[in-house]
Image (cartoon, rainbow, N blue to C red; front, side, top):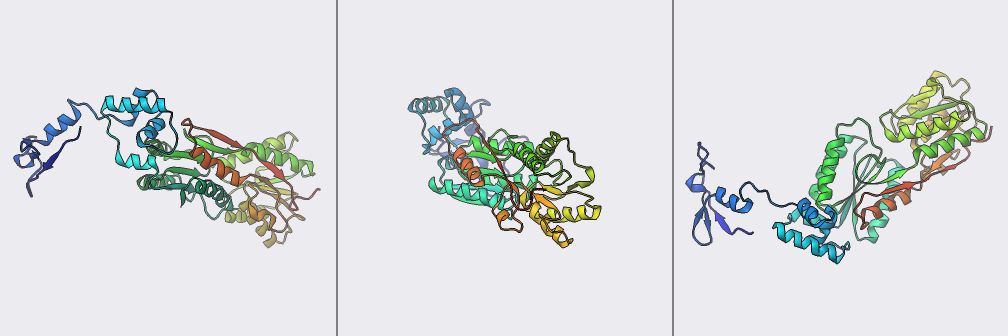
Length: 387
């Protein structure tokens, strides 16, 4: 139902009287010349306490998912079976559903953008993932915009809230989940509201939230690395890692220690240093290891490559030669691992494939949350020569 009215409010007049009645100068003049109060207009629109139909109602009535209902109503480029379109349109007519214009703008992809939220743009890990996302987005005719959360769950939430106002067709969030963050439930609510309006959500992270996810085998890759290093003759290990709540770090540490346990090797707590998940963090942790006294430690595992390269610099500053006096290994196999001296042993993650998979998942016709698992492999280089 479309109400045609010219609403005339008396200048400087109150919206209503103190006893709850509508003041005379807030009456609406209808096209037929009659006068109606806003309360009367609202009752005509909603009925006696009845709320307007929502996209959820239409989806439930027609027996399809919310995303399918949205695409059927807004003429999205993603195909919907004719039988589903007919059922959705019939349900919308039955319920007197009126689409929300901003929601339609999202679903139709009128902005032709995909939003990418990353933890740290200075880390080549994220720029490599972004390259894969951009490649797939260009094929789909989308422009990728990027925002940086600085590994802050609250900032990540704030970014998503702002992005909803920009109406991107896709939101991809790349980065480790952080346990215990107060923003978890509000983030889910924001993303579900965006998705209900026709947007698509994909995470590059642990499969922790109820959305499509591309996840990396952190545990398996680190376990393989531990076994490979033991196979090279290493027996005394140090570790540079992030805080326990940082899921990526915890998974990699768990896989690495489980691989060592099979060889009956454990890491002395003195040689397990907690630091920031950055190159500077790796540098500071390596300096701390030197200060504690390496005492026979022959290899250090850093849970990502940027931490490992920072550690290599710190060891050099302390007068040690990486690859000769102390071996070191990382994880991710980012581009610079082959450019440093010595070249860095790492666990290779096909980061461009991660990005491509994320965008393809976002543009998929399948409405159900998908899960893509990315396998890893160990790459041995000069930083861990045989003992």
